[in-house]
Length: 278
Ligand SMILES: N[C@@H](CCC(=O)N[C@@H](CS)C(=O)NCC(=O)O)C(=O)O
Image 1 (cartoon, rainbow, N blue to C red):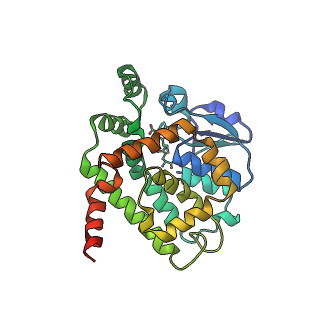
Image 2: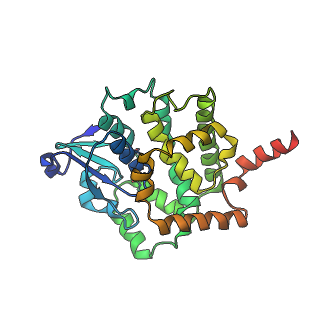
Image 3: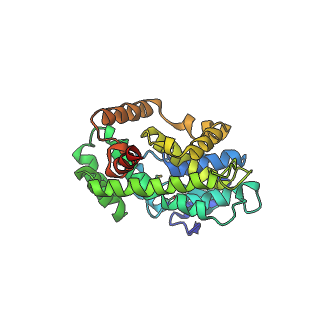
């Protein structure tokens, strides 16, 4: 669903590119990388997700699901990060030379597992929000799926749900590793494209959890290459608040010490056990 009719009709009079985004949201990161790689400048509207600014009536008039990112170009509103990056790059650009969109669709579908695992393995580092903030979010945010997700997070996710998300994420990364195993430089071949951009934030995110990327060496080498691009620093790394990253790293270490990190879940335990037997 790339373009939608704005409920907030004032958006129709905006000129140029306007992006509603959040510093550490993976969907926003891929949009900013595309902006940078396409040499586009935009007016930045930061939505503070930690302060639940996406639960305000004003923001939900911009994005009907109350999510980031949202893009307005010359009065036309676009949501869904994969559609947005295609729109920014333009159909005829080298970035858009993506053969069959499989890897873009996979990146889109990986979002829910990335979200669950981010909340579990990174955001749990923060103290739980005060009761008033929880109530205000539940009252204000109209996205029922997100309301339920927040409740599940507060109650503690079921360990099978976490393990299933880990297993699906691993299947995705194994697939990318397989694609790259023919020695290609980028996911679609010799050229850097939107497929690379779509996956850069995901690999970056899982590195914060100390995901075992040693099992997918071609993917690891690809990430090393793409993370040397100026867009990675300027559109992703430079937007991250340093204290948040330090807290994630410390939290990941603490879960490793107490044996509750990503690698301790049955999916990886089973793989490690089978490797021990070979
Ligand atoms: N499929 C959507 C997903 C958008 C989405 O889930 N955005 C996240 C950030 S990456 C968000 O707004 N999360 C708010 C929350 O978790 O409360 C897209 O690709 O744009």
